[in-house]
Image (tube, rainbow, N blue to C red; front, side, top):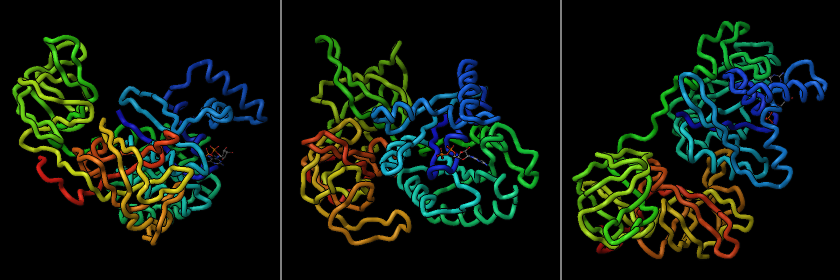
Length: 415
Ligand code: GDP
């Protein structure tokens, strides 16, 4: 399974590329193809207008239904995919942040005529900030620059440099003509100077493994206690493996136990791995509740109540330091205050700027203070236990997403 998002400015050809990709992957059903032919003709075009494939979602948006990120599933014989289309113009940063925090890879589109724009830099910075380490740079509209290798190279070279400087580990670049399908589902014969794979081939074969193996972590979603004879802690493993007999520690309290049973959806399991939803039974009764984290005893998650973190601000009202927000981290909730905005980041140049508040779509580096200690990980190591959201108490709106950087101070007397 590969999860990815597409990023680009308006009119770069995102919808066309995605529509063409689904078409080339054979994922459009007969009735969808009929509708596409009909709608393309109605628009007066001779050829299929692939941007219409994703139009149903636009209609929903016009009706005012909020869709931060529209996810679609498709598959080929070699791999399954979930692709997120991050819509919206003025809310682009928020939508991208929502999408990017859940994916392994981003396809960044550039219009060959325009080259690298401040938006390209901004999207790449947000991808890097949100933990994406692999980018496909699709240089689209190559037909409008005479399918010229020189134009392509002049975009790709500087892009590789800027992406590397932001911490992106791999850039796969390719020249594309989205409506014609050149290098989308098949390799283009019109650009023989490009010898790499098509977009679909690349997506089918790219290394999707994300985080390095980490110690066992299970954020407890709920305590399952149907009767006196059974007490289990349910959640989805977010790091490492656990086996029956393993010693674990429950945090933030620091209570130790051994795993007695691992209950899977259908039967008991001998062990469990990341992504698996399980219920753990321990060999002794502990007072565990939603939001606690069960960790490998030898390598417990750090616990703290003060952090340095990046915040991407979504709120209509600005972030005001010292106001109290609700923080959700993994399955845990706490009250949080931003005690200092160290700086905000100019998302186009990445320059740090002095700031006393954060406005909608701004990114800042802040200190945050919780009313109780929580188990966490650095976002760079674990997006589940390192990524959080802030919620406004009055409006219940999500006003920010955050990436934990490190603990400012460990609380006393906790593991
Ligand atoms: P989006 O706003 O990024 O989703 O862009 P669209 O997919 O709606 O495309 C914007 C316009 O550019 C449409 O008129 C497309 O037909 C056109 N377009 C997209 N890709 C290409 C391309 O490779 N070559 C040419 N000539 N036009 C393209």
